Length: 101
Image (tube, rainbow, N blue to C red; front, side):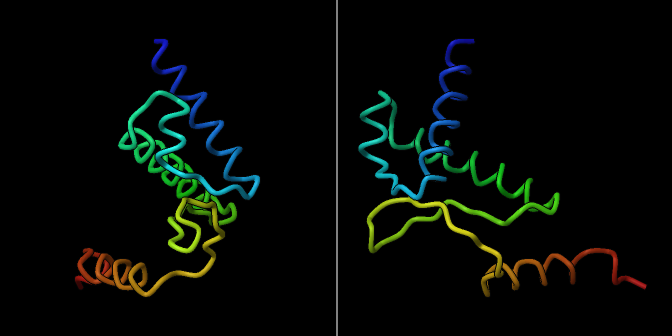
């Protein structure tokens, strides 16, 4: 139970930190919180899943991405679909049964 509460607190802090425009350094965050870098990666994935759910409900599209220039993770608005996302969505639609008639 304590681990779950720690994780929730950590993810909420992470969300607040990134929403403030700060750059997240994975190694530093892991050391400060006594967790592994892999755990930080999982927390980021959880945040991205949360933002995807919000986007599906009509909220602003946000995503945590890695910035090579800043050597860390940042929260960005992702209102436009990337070419990779468009391709993936197209493949899903074409392979779905919706067009089989």
